[in-house]
Image (cartoon, rainbow, N blue to C red):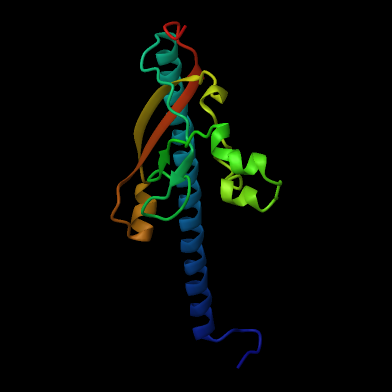
Length: 177
């Protein structure tokens, strides 16, 4: 037996390893291509939504001022500030509501009971709320086809990715004043 000549089985193993590495590289390249195409389409979609909001602002279409948010009610996912949450209006306090605190001695621990710890709801009085900015909404959506090579390599059943963007752009309405 020649020591420099590999066994026949070892040569076959090297070919299999090369084939597996090439397939893995092909999957990685297809995934990079899909990510770049989806990212490019996402930027185009967001620019289209921004253009829609800009057009609505120029034409004074769909303006709304919204309301003051006091706090958030968590939705089903139990995470704050997500799409399923509901903003609630703040409770307005007057000085008469704080009579005991104002006439009695000052105690730092009483601030906790007043609700000053909530980062979203400082104690508001109606006169402290100024005119809100008018917001104009713009929407756009598009679909991105998943590359056929990636679908077949990963045995995917989904053919496309849906992109939806909604943008709010501040402005002011001429009808507001």
